[in-house]
Length: 454
Image (tube, rainbow, N blue to C red):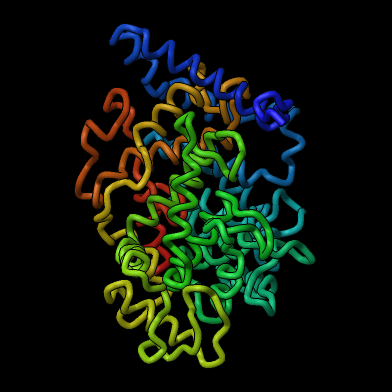
């Protein structure tokens, strides 16, 4: 049979259509004079601010389908505004704090709207939104004690978490619970117990991480699982070489990232996949060790005499003798003694202070090109891909990915990006984010200091 004459699949036709649209844009860009190229690459800050601020004040009736996601809308808009280095009027900030307080359940956690069921995802969104607003009134509105009891209720015998009462169990639930507990300074061994076992069981043969055991590797879940393993100090249990290989091949011909194998490019993965690279840059010592084992013909097995474990924890096998403290000790030595003694609530702070000594492990300028030329809507807002409408979700995560790109060559916050690292005019430079939480780093520091004293 002549394969070239075979009828193309729907997936192939969709891919060719997207490639055609995007390469038309790139061909047009290449044909323009320098001043026109510069204009196309400029981040439309004023238009983005107008679009975002309007959405924070009032949404049209079509948003009623997102009634259970209102804290997310607050977070997407506020975080995008913070990335642009802007802030909103005090009255709007007060409205956000008051609204999110009404979403806070009396028994802990935040719901998608007042009177709804508390949910881990909207809890993460609400807390990130309040951290982004900043200030004592905003941060003190979070009931940490009740929130901790909510996390305990969602904790499962497997070590994982449910998203809500009788809800699904997945890697996203683990991340949202651990992320919020970490930034609020309420993370402890009880919440961490067996989370690592569950996430390791979700890493697939491809190297990425699935939402649950046996499912397909996915960009969003890969970020969530990887970030969680860093926050609980068990990142060395993952096959990082396999994870790097998987995520590197998700940057597509169109210069952006896809979320899964054989899927279309989508600008939101500029953060979900791009953020994984930002995390990998700071665990380079463990990754280099794994790659060294592979190049020398060895494996990634930890020495049981050193760790006290009786199995290969890098492959996630259950150990009859391994305990949380033994895993902590092993990871402590692999991370170069960052945590001595280990304090679960200092990992996020130590991590962002750790220099990113590795160069970017993805094509940063190519991704910036995709975001600015194909995802940016000149009238304001960003979209998934050409032909799609703008929305607050893609605006948030496209800008987050753009920030990751711009700072990917800066080892730490004392080194601002070089002009060569920022595509387009240097005025495109956004605020730096904390890659574990996806909040602007200055707002993270304020929250870290505030909750460290409680």
